[in-house]
Image (cartoon, rainbow, N blue to C red; front, side):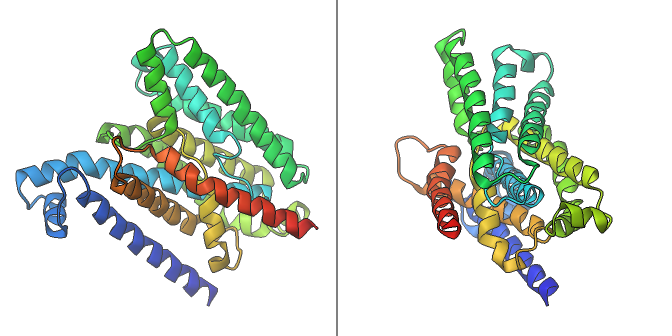
Length: 332
């Protein structure tokens, strides 16, 4: 019965994601109906429709899939590994650290030397942040310790990023870095998709490979080790998977927060609080949430399109506050 429930949940999320994708492909300065979207997507429509759908709007949708799946799956995996419900790449400073790596690459002009320098730097800094967090919280630390460690990493990454902005050679460079740090998937092309796609797929594959071990780890490290779980391998899978997927996405989209916190909490009850079964639904749900937020910001009538990172923060910050208050009530 639990397996069938998980299967139905995954099917529902997949249908939701595909539906949102069709809606997203139809939204823009030149609105398209469902038939026109399908015609442009399949190549049977007018040349103008094919150009709008395939070259302008489809990369945005694919990036929303990759970004949301990375943040959702990594958030669920980190929560399972650390056995802490408040673990999330953005909240713990992993995304900010990946952003710092990208900013330093842009600041020193290293991205002009080689195209792959940007994602490599983002993934390296995300890896270092994840390793630091795990080292600080592995000894059964409390939620408060995890939050403080994440705040410290975020503050350090933010301070160094601000320093780079302060020392930017000209105002144009500083403005470009600021807009990039706010997070967005607009004005992206398939070149950006190709830049992050292999790393995201590899990272998510590593995270999904940790499913069975995360199920057993929920019993405790000692029990999991007794039952044959290789804890070192599990840590490598989760840490490397998070660094690859989140770091590669941040290199292309900028920092997007709270997705990895909100989605696992919304879906956890539907998988009977099983950390291993939560990974795939969190990936699908994360993609749906990012795509839904991107649709919402395009529908809001403003003189200038809102940035995706701003919208997810406006949704995620109150959610995080509610979780903290609930945790405090449970402790009393």
